[in-house]
Length: 334
Ligand code: 2NL
Image (cartoon, rainbow, N blue to C red; front, side):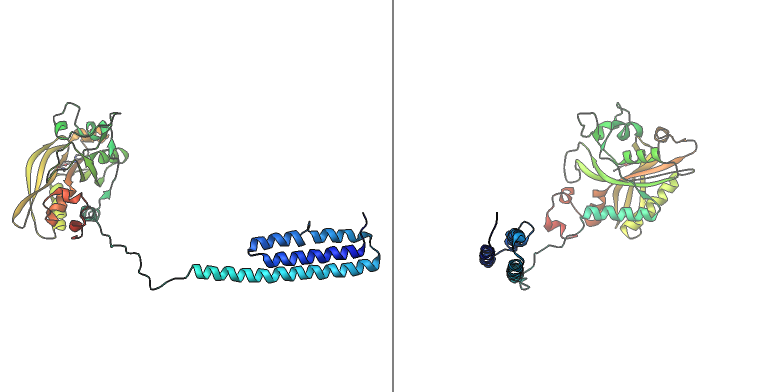
C-alpha cells in the first residue's frame, strides 16, 4: 500500500490534534500514562505512520520526518506539562486531606495500673528471688498423677475430698495446687532445688467472702542435702518480715498434708493479731521417691500460700470477691 506524503502529513497533523485534545481532557496520572503509551509507545500510532515513510522520496522523507519530530515533541511537551499539573493537584489534594488540627482534643486513655493480686504476687516473687529461688510455671490442666499420685495422694486418700476439683472428660483435671509444677521441675532437675511456683488453681468450693473456686497459690520448695525444719522456719521468718515490712512473730501449729511430714500451719502475729498465712512442712519421703530422689540423701521443705489471702491481709480487703469483679471504684485505690 502506497501513501502520499501529503496524506502522511495530514495523518500526522490529525494525530497531533487528537492527542493534544485528549491530553488536555485527562484528569488522572494513570490515564495520562495510557495516552503516552498509545501515542508515543513502540506500538503507537505515530510509530506506525513513520513506518510507512520507507517508500517516500528522499526530500519527502526529510520533510515528513521533520514534521513527525515536531509532532512528537509537541506531544512530549503536552504530556509533560499535564503531568506536572496533575502531580501538583495530587499533592494539593493530599495536603488538604491530611490537614492536622492541633487544637483537636486527644483520645482519652485512662491510666492503667497493676491489679492488687498481681502486685502482691510480684512482691512475694521478688522476695524469694532475693533469697535465691527460681520462678517455675506449668500447666493449669494436669493429669491425676502430677496433681495427686506423685504427691502421696492415691485415689482412695481422704484428702481428695477436700481438694475435689473440676474433671475433664478425658480424665485430666484442673490442678488444685501448684505442687504439680514442682513435681515436674524435680523430675527434670537434680538437687539442690530452690523454686517458687505461683499460679491459678481450682477447687470445688462454694464461693463466699473467703473462698473462691479459682484462686492463686504460691508454693515454695527447697530440696538439698541436710535441709531441716529450722531452715523452713528461718526462710519463712525472713520472708514474712520482708512482706510485712516490720518485726513479726511466727507460730507453727501441727497440721496434716499428704505430701509433707511433719506438717504445720503457719501464723503471723502482725499488729497484735494472729493471722493464718498458709501451710508447710518437710517434704514426705514418698514424694521424693516419686521423682527419683533418694530420701536417705536428700530432704526438703515446702510451703503453700494463697495469694488472695496475702492481698486481703496487706490491704485490709474484707471479701475475696472484690479481687475478681473488676470494680474500678475498688481497684483505683491501689
Ligand atoms: C496450703 C498448704 C502446702 C505444700 C503446700 C508441697 C509441694 C511439694 C511437696 C511437698 Cl512438691 N509439699 N507443697 C506443702 C505444704 C503445704 O500448702 O494451705 N496452701 C494454700
